[in-house]
Length: 207
Image 1: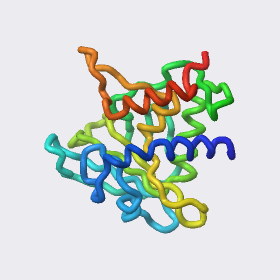
Image 2: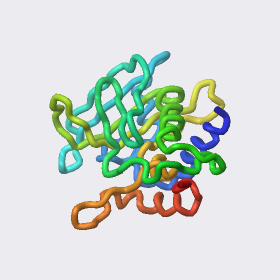
Image 3: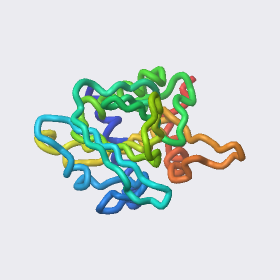
Image 4: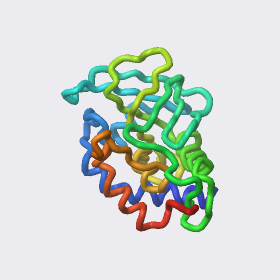
């Protein structure tokens, strides 16, 4: 557990430059929300899932808030099942290699590292989970492409409130990689610097 949390906080701390993209209101497609934005949704003694939908002009058009009962299922490197919603981290593909260097010194199967890291964030640390999408309505069985963030830390944890960025963390830890469009363009240019940094840290490709 200790080693696991060391990886968690290393990933979060190294993701701090991306906070420059956020705004105080958090109402921008996919922007990383500041902790104070997430805290407005928190409830004592419970975990909350917030789904925000944005239109093509970047306007927030719908928000649903649900109490989370039971565990969040980490179904894959970029797949999550939260409060009855199937979420896929947008523009990313999971597990670029079968094994990865996890905690900078242990070789793990990629999917096991995903479940260890993401499970700790979603099921043990998160007070609020916020996912942002541009899918405006829900269809039966639809997987929703989204960027997801969690409020962690705070009361009794000995750490300040922080925003854990799932997209950034998966790429940084070598557990996911950026997809390409049919014409070869990056689906997540905002994460290219994170992927480059990951490759210099020897987190990935332990095969």
